[in-house]
Length: 53
Image (tube, rainbow, N blue to C red; front, side, top):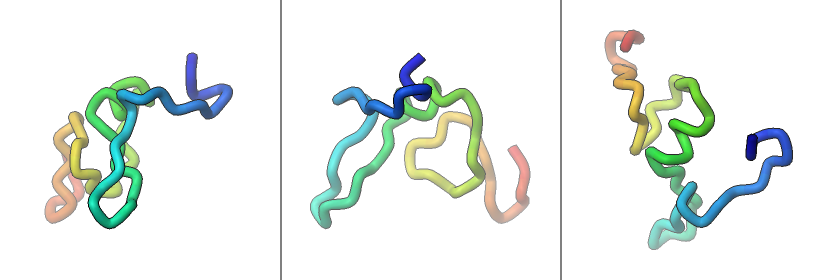
């Protein structure tokens, strides 16, 4: 799996206009868990206000 060698694929992220790396839904699904950082493209449905999914 890709996370053992820490290599990102082109579909895993894009660069924002400010130059930040933004992880995609594809990346999050490959990772397999929610980090609870309120990521923009989180597919796991985490709500930071309620601290729940």
